[in-house]
Image (tube, rainbow, N blue to C red):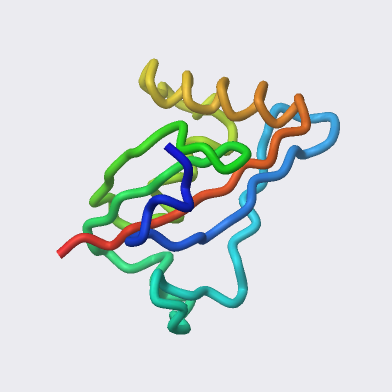
Length: 118
């Protein structure tokens, strides 16, 4: 499904390759806007609220996930920056990082979206 078909999520970050590394950088948008184009505070990224995230590659949704992790969406997505190599990541978390890392090496555009849930 193309992200343009989703009317209830808003973009929060672009993903970039960190040169000569196996890490990814998440460039969180400075000017956050919700799905209705209303400005949002940066603290929405660290608020402890239930949320759904979408990983989008070249406009196509590749993963939909959910989290209630402390530290907000930034904390929830942090594992995907390096696959959790300093700890013991789940196979799923490592697999998502692996997918992102190898996808970005192809030159694809990767974006992160969020949907707040009641």
